[in-house]
Structure formats: structure tokens, C-alpha cells
Image (cartoon, rainbow, N blue to C red):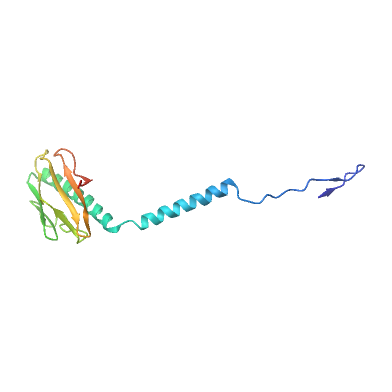
Length: 156
């Protein structure tokens, strides 16, 4: 661009130079978008049978704690027993708690009986859940008798 200053010679302004390429900010935005997209894909591809087994274990732990609380408030003993296709809470009114697995492939491995109360401190107890869809995977729902039931991965 040329400018004219009265009384002076014509001067030329330096031409703005355009550098081609990407800025660091643009590259960081693209990398962040790729990271978010790949995280979304990895969550979408997560093993659904594994997720279902974890959901069943967490649900059972919550149901056991609920039955334990009901046993303590009512003063009646409550036992949990595994039955084919589900489980039963003996000592609670019918339909007080669900008695079926959400996923039909869920199964109890080993002993399927727990004593849930009415004493505030119960003995150390555990139940191991597995799935016919995941033969090598099992989860342990256990309590030391004082703390709530917790879910942990079963050691092979």
C-alpha cells in the first residue's frame, strides 16, 4: 500500500506477509477433538456382558443392604438364597424386594445363602456372581459383618 504525505516523498508501507500453516491453538483444538472422539468410541465398544455383570453385582449389593436394614428395623431374621433364575429373600414380605436377575445369564457360583440380620453385626459373608456369557469373569459381593456389602473382582 502506498501512502502520500504532503511535502514529502512517497513512502511505501511494508507489505503484510501472510504465513501459511496452523497455529498451536488450532492444533491443540484438533487433538482435543480427536481425544474426545476416541474416548467416546472406546466407551461405546466396551464389553456389554462385562458391564451387565458389574451392574448385577452392584444391584445385588444394594438389595442385600436394603434387606439387612429391613431385618434390623423389623427384628425378623432375613436370609438371602439363590434359586434357579434368581434369588429369594426369606423373612421379608412377598414382593418387598426384586427376586430376579436383570440379565438371564447371571449365576451364583458356590454357596448361595446369606444371613442378613436382625443383629447389627453379622458374620463375614460373601457371594460370587458369574455369567454364562463370560465364563472366566466373576465378581465377589462381600461384607466383613460390620461394613456394607461391597463388590470386588474375584481372584482366579
